Image (cartoon, rainbow, N blue to C red; front, side, top):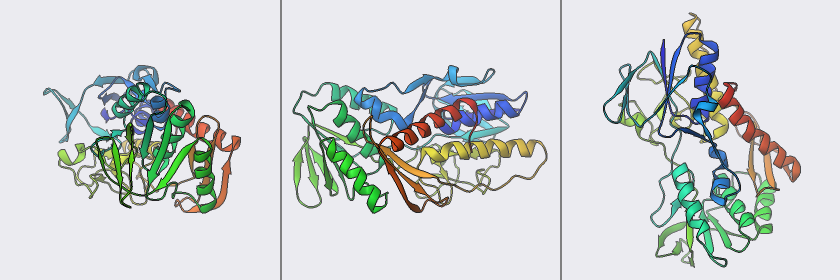
Length: 352
């Protein structure tokens, strides 16, 4: 049986390793544009130069899994078409290309490896006294602003979003904003309308000079599913059945941010459970058993505030917020365990 996994993030790596563990004799190939696994939840550390966030794919995959460093043009009809004309046949495919960033002109995107590398290089070149603006009040923006502020105390750092940290309860939101301000980050609740010649323009009519402007809003997915003729939603995510199979082709599983799963938001925390469920569904089908439906189950939301701070908010399984929230060392440990757990799951094929 031939299995092709497109994408080597948390979902793709976990799916490949889990299938290799559970399906003896499966011929598995992972296709990815680069030869490294990128810990996407740590890209803010890559930007600030506080940690390396890549690991060679070969060291992450179980023995026998093949790796092709290539760009995929299309998936369908039992074939994966690579740039350059080569094709890979499959009996089952896993589409796990994640999400991406469509940045505003005049900004550098920080939610992708390429953007993070560009941001790191430009940040390194800034002299003391320069101003860095982070656009996006969600987890990506908060962690980027905090990490840069802590690593480069000689810079002025601001974060701008319609309502910074609004994904938390009032108490946790206050904790997150207080943590940012403690690091010297200016918190601005507003919407950016344009960035021109180093000036950030806001909906309120205000404008602010910025030597480096980082776009920290992840809101798009690669167009591979649409380009392949699969049915997608308004955001370009492939529509799937309740077992995470494409509604157009039951041989294709779609997992992670690129899957239109009801009740799922963009989150690395969902990549592992979805990949594990899809891999287990394949095992059940091979064994002649009925597949089981998948349902997102959330546990918490958490953001780091530099290397010594964090805020964690527990949630119900449907992602509604609980009252309990944590800050300080306990929250740091919880966030670190979650980050390491994601990589460990991807490496071993455990998750869900």
